[in-house]
Amino acid sequence: MLGTNPVLCGSIAGRPGRFGVAMHNAAYRALGLNYVYVAFGTEDTAGAVGAMRSLGIRGLGVTMPHKIRITEFLDHITETARLISAVNTVVNDNGVLTGHNVDWIGAVRALGEHTALAGTHAAIVGAGGGARSIVHGLISENCAVTVYNRSEVNGQALADAMGVPFGGTPEELTSADPYDILAHATPVGFHDPRAMLVPAAALRPEMVVFDAVPMPVETRLLREAKSIGCTTVPGVRMQLHQAACQFELYTGIAPALEVMEGALLEAMEQG
Ligand SMILES: NC(=O)c1ccc[n+]([C@@H]2O[C@H](COP(=O)([O-])OP(=O)(O)OC[C@H]3O[C@@H](n4cnc5c(N)ncnc54)[C@H](OP(=O)(O)O)[C@@H]3O)[C@@H](O)[C@H]2O)c1
Image 1 (cartoon, rainbow, N blue to C red):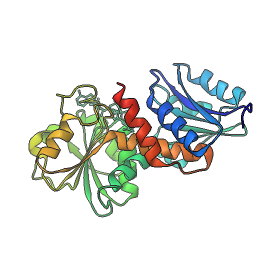
Image 2 (tube, rainbow, N blue to C red):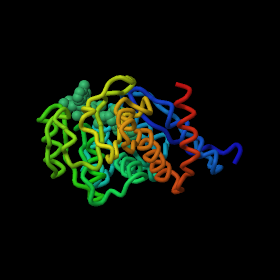
Image 3 (cartoon, rainbow, N blue to C red):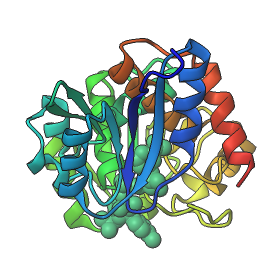
């Protein structure tokens, strides 16, 4: 394979991260694939899609600010990405670009490692793209979902779009609510180990508590939940599983999850 051009994959983001680079390249190496993954920093969505076409980039992970506006530049959007109203992955099949959303699969797999989802009740806190993916994923697993959000307008809009109830603001959650799963999907707690939106009094030991916030790995919400005996699921698990889905879309091969996980944790330790 030496001397042959590698297949190029990568990501586009306003602020490019290092975790995708670490995970995907480690998994390519482990399988001996002649692929390389690069994180591109750009605000220019149309230009990035044009480059994908002209340079023959095989796959791109898509984060802010491109997730919604990229849809107008692609040839196809999967039904799920349309439902979630956001694309987080683009696959290039010989010049035909298809937008996917695999965030929801990441959430479902991360939670599914700890609990059976069918028949459970879940409270989702937040109404952005992350919350939307999680709501979609849980509904598709036959879980009953209620949305909580700071602004009623946005919370109600998400609830209506997904056909589930709006429960109120996060502060209104109490331990009397019958939830098996609590999934937090706002930026509160991101890079701030003290911040927490959900009242500690709303937690019960039998709950599974998921925090989509990727950093720190253990947010204050997860620490408080763990301290009373809840099962906790960090956002990095969602990130890992959705990266594995992307890898499979680009290469057609399921990656070794432990290789990607090791690379992710190592990259996180480096700060
Ligand atoms: N682990 C993963 O793979 C993964 C994937 C996707 C997202 N995420 C994470 O999920 C979180 C949410 O991301 P996002 O893309 O959905 O959208 P976002 O724009 O980061 O967050 C929007 C949501 O957060 C609420 N919010 C923001 N600041 C708040 C505050 N100070 N107090 C209360 N609510 C607040 C907003 O409420 P209003 O409607 O009232 O404004 C809205 O519901 C981020 O931390 C992101 O990193 C993780």
